[in-house]
Length: 436
Image 1: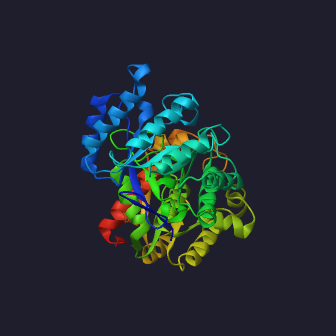
Image 2 (image 1 turned 135 degrees about the vertical axis):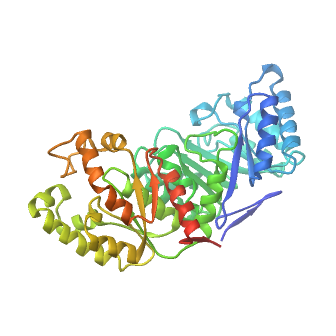
């Protein structure tokens, strides 16, 4: 376990602190947000000073430092992370390097009196700028710790490049290495997670990593895996896309780090409800293995479901599905994502209920149709891809899903981490998930 002791907090790869932002544009908004955040009791507060509107540019330092004093007084004992994010790294305002250096210099001088434990430096983008080394030395001389950051707001580089970015930030002398990326697909999220694990093993400094937007939100709450020492949650407002509320972030982190699951979890539901997607996110949060019945069939037969189903016919396909399910259900600590028609057989329902807690993902027909209408991998819909047909099939299966399910969660919204949160809250109530 690695640790970094600051004035008021200790950063560790074994425990993730929750940080919420203050994004007020003026002193009134700053005080209002701080008052509300103080009641939340986060571990750390990030002041995003780039959101502050400077009224008199010739006295920008005076306005900036006075705002810090107001924030400190409003937050009372809560420690502060100071960040000025330039627009090219996802911030609200852009300043030249000399102004940026001036801001951080004066904040560093006030750090001790105003409870500033950490100062963010856009280290990676400025690593070749004349004066960046002196800025890092100035902040350290003021006895403040530095989060060296890099924000890839348009893309996700490959894993090795991500590790190199974090390595370069550490080599610049930063105390914490932070990296945020914008994922475009699930593979980008996996690249970020893989890079985080490797960098944490390689570096001496603690790391902070995240993938942005809804697609990357899982990285904010599976920090037992990524080893990120800080995660960012929305306070009164979010400061970056993909931030979850403070309450939900805190709850899911506790589950991620301290939960025990009593038995397997099976996900059922009509095609297009996102069983595979939710299963993957849920497995990250709960630290469980995951398996997909349809993917297992494909792996064992070497044929896609859309090809295999008409070739075998429904009866033989369902026989194979039951055989696969029976074998999978013997596993432990596993989330089972089931094919949409698995509940059509009583035998399958008995297997699921005997070996797991069954969670049904449910959605309105219009939502389902929107998700599946352009796909050609749904053999039961290929001959009649219409909303009426979707409704008819869902009505036919409604009783089967309802009887099989122990828990039902609506997924019309589509946010995978929020769906996981709703599932976990019900699993906690039933005693299947226990948080120590």
